[in-house]
Amino acid sequence: MDSEATSSLTSKGQITIPKALRQQLGLARGSCVSFQLVGDHIEVRPLRQEQSLSASGF
Image (cartoon, rainbow, N blue to C red):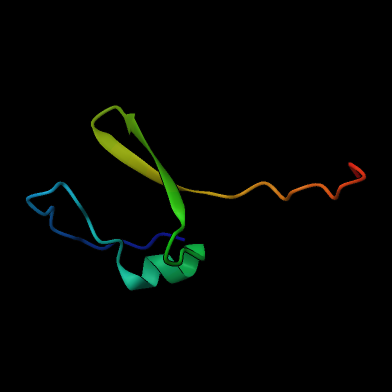
């Protein structure tokens, strides 16, 4: 996946992740992402919720 897109930063510091990238990563409303500063750029990664264990623990 080597997609590139641009987005503008709002006055509140918000950025819209382009639709094509959201779809490729399976991001939907309420999805969480992490941000990490790597050298001179920011990496944004989807956070996957861990699957919960059943009441029995298995």
